[in-house]
Length: 372
Image (cartoon, rainbow, N blue to C red; front, side, top):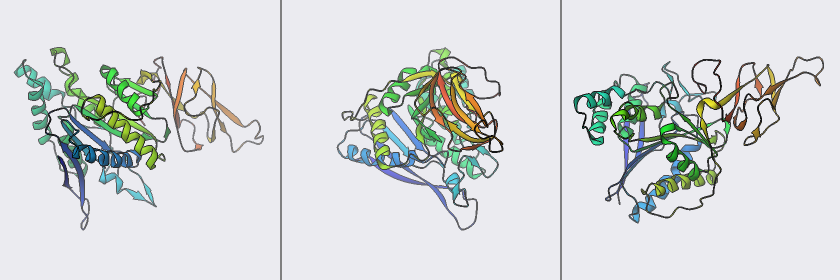
């Protein structure tokens, strides 16, 4: 058996408290790719936490039967800092209370590392690039708890062949964010995860965790070196979709993907043919509230909408004639409604949902379309 569990101590922000990460590693005798998975980098997004518990349990049994190849590294909770940010019983785990920003933004770009190695030796191997990346991660600053956490997670993941970051939305279908260079692998993952939506981009902006792993390879792709890390962000529905049945199904989906990649040597189970809409991230309509009031959807998650179709209304609570006191929201694109906000009392301009379309949209707000 190859399963080991490590506990990595982290900085604490106050006396009398401790923080640490648990890391499950499966290092099989049979060579193969390295896989890294983590959950709840946004610490208020919990479906992945339960999914990885089920996945680890399955991997332990597969490991006992010597049915694994390569190395699998799983961090079942990636952000103990954010998980501790509780106010009045509510976990606020998306942005750091230390004023260091969104936990899934501003990750380092190691493109200069791989470009430097390429310039030094045009014949550098994939392993030489990975060693350079490991050395660069070892030099990252660790002067704050969050800086140390980022450096620790990157030390575990930067040399992986596959990196899957498990998140969720507010209310949503399963969907996947990935790089357009890796469309085929992204659609395979979508089939395994029963995800009807794959959103492809070149670089999403904001420097999220997944970008830190692919940008160094994109920087040297013109040299003929393959993009040697498949990385994707997997959104496991909405934040309230946390139960054993969903988590078991999602864990099996991850196992099926590892089976398809010849890392798990066991037959895939419970595969269901899924119709996948693969589109450009910039073809996503970030739906905005057109007024302040109570939001009432006329379309439901998973429904197809036409451009200009009524999809929701905002009820004006100050109206003297409530029957007429509604402001319409129309779709800017043809596509599938795949996320909606849980908040029903909205302000004008709030991002209240997303529609995956097929035509690139003008981003009038500036910045990344999905910057919130």
